[in-house]
Image (cartoon, rainbow, N blue to C red; front, top):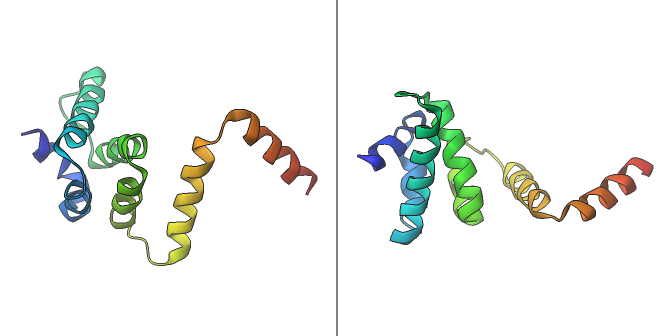
Length: 111
């Protein structure tokens, strides 16, 4: 049942299947459990496909960055390499320590 919840992300089971085939059982279980927990916390009995997609993206980014980019490329329908690059750049920025981000932002603002 829980997999059925995830496969309805904008009706795009292909995106999820491409990712799940590369993850081991334990990681899949963690992904699903985390998403289900977040949904349960809201107290809602139904959520939108857009919300579910956002939850999948968030959890995948935390769990496996390559799986995240794979899912994002299908889910967001990437059309060119620039979109992949942008997504990877965003992931890298999110993982940088805060001090390093502050230094980069300062350098960029002085440009």
